[in-house]
Amino acid sequence: MKKVNDVILRTVIKGVVLIILTLGVYLFFSGHNAPGGGFIGGLVLGSAIVLLYITYDIETIQKKMPFDFKKVAALGVLLATGTAIGSLYFDVPFLSQTDGYFNIPILGEKHLSTVTIFEAGVALTVIGTLVTIILSISEDD
Image (cartoon, rainbow, N blue to C red):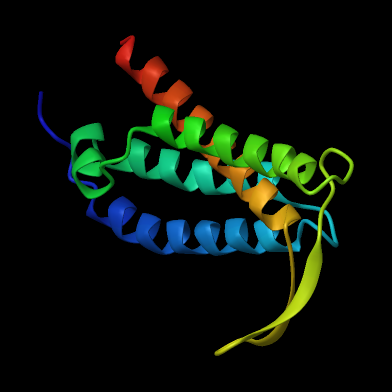
């Protein structure tokens, strides 16, 4: 089978993926105080990865990103569950959160919350599951 010369597509996708990843990170971090969060951020980030798999072949992306996305999903579940169960060790209600203001060198003083760790677990679970499903479907050809 002859490979199609898709130089323009691959060049444009590099910029588009950067924009999608930036949007995904923004949605992830804005989720605690506005619409967004781990689920929608994970969907957007996962869609950027799927777009790379569609544009390039699976082997090329696997060499650049050697992740087992099933393990990424499992790590996300463990992270989300760990933060939820962690509240029980401090004798507070299940899924309680704590927060504070921290001085981050480049960003300055930022408000951080333990819910961000939970949302990171949700995002990793969504990314891992989304990419695993898409890769499973593509193997059935």
